[in-house]
Image (cartoon, rainbow, N blue to C red; front, side, top):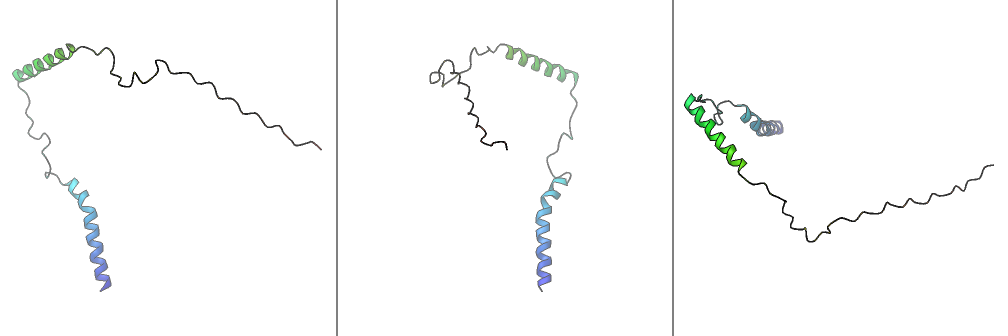
Length: 99
């Protein structure tokens, strides 16, 4: 009886672990990815090119920002102070004597 319970538990656990991987490999179950893609006619291509050109022209009309907004600008010093180099620790003198 224990063997039957162990085998069924193992089969269920294996099924739960394998089902996500199986779901990823099933073709045709998800969204169609560009299966019915139509090619654009020459008129549609011209229209799309005109739309792209108008978009790029409108991007050129946007003014550049002079300086980025710095909300903490008044809290900081204008120039950060330079820190002094760390002092070297004094070297210990050897107390060993030569015999």
